[in-house]
Amino acid sequence: MIPFNRPPYTGKELDYMAQAVLVNHKLCGDGPFTKQCHALLEQQTGSPRVLLTTSDSDALEMAALLCELKPGDEVIMPSYTFCSTANAFVLQGAVPVFVDVRPDTMNIDETKIEAAITDRTRVICAVHYAGIGCEMDTIMNIAHRHGLLVVEDAAQGVMASYKGRALGSIGDFGCFSFHETKNYSMGEGGAVLVNRPELVEKAETIREKGTNRSRFLRGQVDKYTWVEYGSSYLPSDINAAHLLAQLEMADEINRDRLDSWHYYEEGLAPLRDAGKLRFLEPPAECAHNAHMFAIRVKDLEERTALTSFLKERDITVSFHYVPLHSSPAGRKFGRFHGENVYTDRESDRLTRLPMYYGLSRAEQDQVIDAIFDFFGQKR
Image (tube, rainbow, N blue to C red):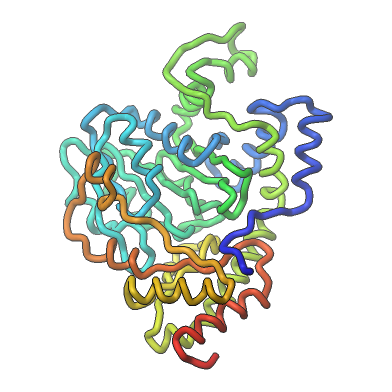
């Protein structure tokens, strides 16, 4: 059986977790392992402040709070994303305004954003699908001209970049995921990147239940108290210990996944060239992180048949998002602006192949051979 995903494991995770419990005696948030994760992520991204959270959903909620949205404000985003992207803003009373995606990357179509802007628009949320960067120069230019904030949902984008800049570090705020399905994992977890230095202290306060505890721990105040709205967004230091073992080997994990991605690309290229399927197409300015290898077939019927065929061969694959605009909550809370040319069509065609750290060539060959067999082709 070839699973769709296997959480990464480097060998140091249990030792670090035991150290948190037996040596450090620090299990709650912002312990020694959390601080080391913060330092490594800040070094890797160049963001002035990176703060671990309990999930990417919570990182997005923090970003929405930092945007100071009011009921009725609008946030432009793709419909092809996970519900957490929209939930974070809906919880603040904002309205998601969905626009179409690009067919090459499944990212938000930057050319559709400006037409969706109204006098209620406050934020553009750029989702970096599959760790492939959105066209950030254009998005930032639009935001600056219209006085908008930019939130990067880089849940899948750790160790990926756009024109040499780490995804998540370009907009006003960035959000990472460290869920077990991501390239680097703490089971459940995430991080918020605060790219505006003047808002770092506010972010720390929101993350610490609305208290100025961070200032107290730095000796800046003699006691801490409730000073702002906030919630409890800190993960356990045990989870951070698990993550640190992987962040220390981030380059090796990234190389391994990229090797697997390119092996799929090379192996399946004849089927692409024959018009049987299509890959995602990372632009030259984007260094992706091989978060997934996705293929797109003719239509929903063919994808369903392919999924069943591979399952019979003990290969687990998965489709991805049901576009938010077509969901009950999407219809209730948001709206789609402009023509939906690619969002529904491409989401119906897309299948994600097994991809994880340590995926073997034998496993990949089994997947590739099975796909060739499905199309009645010889490899």
